[in-house]
Image (tube, rainbow, N blue to C red):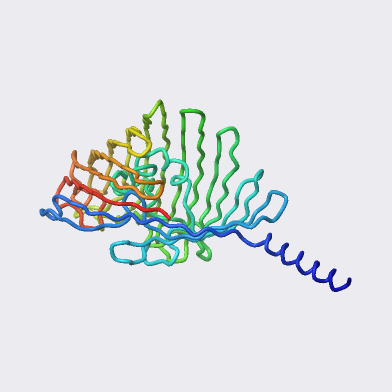
Length: 381
């Protein structure tokens, strides 16, 4: 009888351990296609590129039920180039996300690690690029980070539960510089609201001395701009009626003493010193679900920039048009065709910002305009 009781106790203990184990999901996505780019240093280019509609990735995420509605959560996710096999995000093993934290059904989720900011979380989903189109439809130089050019290291992030369609959150990325907590520090706040056919998002982000250290919130290889200060505000609205979704997004990026950009390189003027650079982005987007498997979409963004130097100022203007068609063979596999065109007008700055740019790993334009057509396949697992 004692043996039976002992065996029963051991089996019960094993069952309890099994219930306490973390539930882990392995997932990924491969986005790979052929691009035709005009005016690449004055010549056309055909090449294979990875991760345009969505970044190619491999990830692991999981949770453990701690009881009382509280769970431990984690997620690690790398980015890679499917055409070469190289790691993305500057070669980081888990460059897209690396986080751990606690989640409560009633209190929200608190996580620590390398994470997305509030612009990505709340404004990105109402843009074309952050929702259904990806990189080619981003605003010039992804100046507002709605296409998630960079993540925030050493960050603490809170996300609320959903209250009658409303959710909010914030993030703080530590500068980790002794004696100067603001050096390479990032913080952001945002929220979204969904009610019937309406979806709205708003966000703000503040970055100080971006990329000046490798131990702070933004590493030099991550930053879309290197600047003394970078402030981003964005807000947008989507409305769905029938098979059609229409959207409008406004964002403003204000940079103080910027020196370079990840896409265009140095933006130091030939005469004077660049003191401020501002972008105002106005986006209209539309998506029509032709059938359950097929949709078409379009986007137009008008961007006003202001380039202030000690020797004067300039006001370049960017017009970006994007078209996309996507057909899904299944829930996991689809093919898509994209086209984008950008033209730079207005004043000249005397820097690489005068060159038309459809963001591409291939090469930037040789002058003020560029177009790209992409045909690709995407598989999720």
